[in-house]
Image: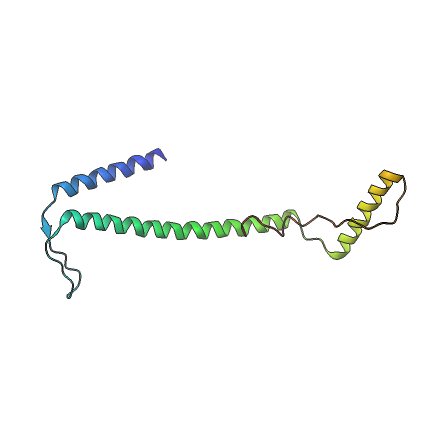
Length: 130
């Protein structure tokens, strides 16, 4: 990070020296119908640098968003592999086993009652990246 800051400051210093040393007006032939005459070289250099900074920012932002989407997709896949979805039959068996264990711990024998819903597989449903 510090190296990037130093390189940026050196480039900025070179740019400042270059613009101060070149105040002369120059023609800028852009197209046949638009050719401004007498624009200071300082303005041409600064506008060129500004356009380059904006273009690199936009391209970097696009790449960053693509990488974020890829990370989210990989996190969802990882969550699904860690916590596979529960089928209806497995969920019923798990519910009954949990209820029976809870009743056995409380009363010493199973009691008829309403089973609690299973929680396995719920982590894969609500991802962080949605």
